[in-house]
Image (cartoon, rainbow, N blue to C red):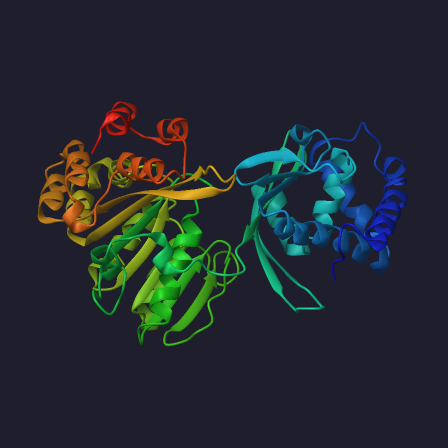
Length: 422
């Protein structure tokens, strides 16, 4: 149960938390550091009453709920770098939250540990990092549910936490602005197999785009979708499709294991949350090779970089074989960025590569440097370079000239396009 942050109830919670933390210094002396300090913080919260622990959870959940009011994508706190403040990213800008008091690193350790289970704390201490999901439910008036993706980590022996809000509603597939040819490639009714990648840097909206694609298939095809994610963010309710969600660390041990196991679960579409390592990349190629439709994401900023990254991640002795297999199974890459718009929000800019016969030959022959020009000239197939899309957004007066140049991968090409009268 969370409360509005501008109410008297919330102000009382702040007072109660201050009272709880007033005893922290006596229980956890400043000379204790490292894991010993974290264990002391753990012992401290275990000694609190259930009422006080619930009060701290209510405080935390109220801040999460406030993220939606402020249209914030991320919340960060804890660790020395936070300067004892809570930070939110709103429309791309990360700033301290002014209405919240300062909490030192020890107090933040307590707040963070209080929301974790015993098993999660054990994993955190062993791995020095923990990915997990958070779900909160509004009791009144609308009974809304909100989900978040969280990452807890160590910074100079203190705990820090990032929480990313998962959109409560899915962006309509049509709003992605993909050509009809590319839209067909992504629909299992039109193409039953092949690998499609959504790429971009952290915070580029890859998961949101992937959810839009899953949603489009869910409402248009009679099929079975298996989503393997770490953690599971948006939960898709089965419609025409049977949709299964498997969370890495809870339901399955790894992306690789989940991908291999999916073959025995009669899937039509397999969604791999992220191609994190060579083993997962090879597993993704294997299941695509077997005739399935596979979607996944990668942390790269362009289509050509994505190709080079996939091949470069694998063992040197396997790279030639991976290159050939990738050329055969890859159907499309969408590399995207969220760029500042003139209205103060952010808008989607994207680069789209469709694997035509020419692109396939360039991949197989290790001539990926030629592919950018193929994208530039591939409008009839639904292709577009990042620079062309940024130019489009500028001419539609959605972004500024400076933003277009700043977010371009190819600075020379974007300046030529912006100067062109066409």
